[in-house]
Image (tube, rainbow over all chains, first blue to last red; front, side):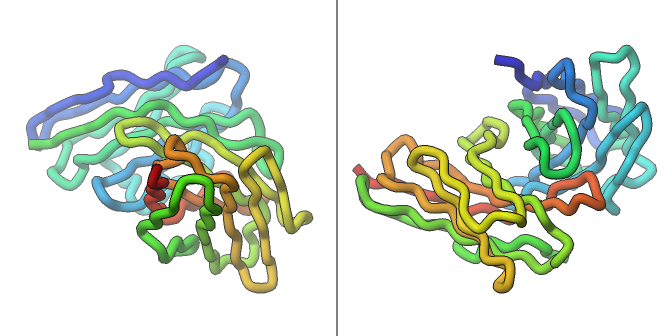
Length: 115
Length: 112
């Protein structure tokens, strides 16, 4: 069964360091997402990506964040200068189409711990 | 701005009985709703969805009900099994946008 894969599963970093979280979405999917969940809180939307550009982003997704699809298979989330409050579980998701035609498939998540 | 709300953070049910998880939303533009199940340290797994043209969708032990006038949906699990113990999130989207809005989740415990 096709799945979304994420690496690393856990990353520990010092405040101010750059972090790149990687995702391989399901191969025939066209829409890609990053969500995050701070411990004990709701799953929060960060950004959606379609046709090689950002289609929507939340207010969380400020200038410290960027996304890329560098090679047609990977989808990356970069945090330029991490803050303590960036500590969270980051989930990549993909879907085949928008609207009512398809659900989001999530990866297992990357746990980011900022010290 | 909490557009999707799950007011019960936790629920305990005896094995074999019905579990009812509730979700409310505020945005009348939402027209597609999903339920996800999440185990600790894993990503959310899709369970069942419903579009606004329906008021009920059933898949095995799982049934989702949608009340558009009340902006309310519920997930029924019958019969509940210990393996159903997890956090359940409802999510909503509008055809005008790309993102899904998630509720805060309800932690279901099914007691054997």
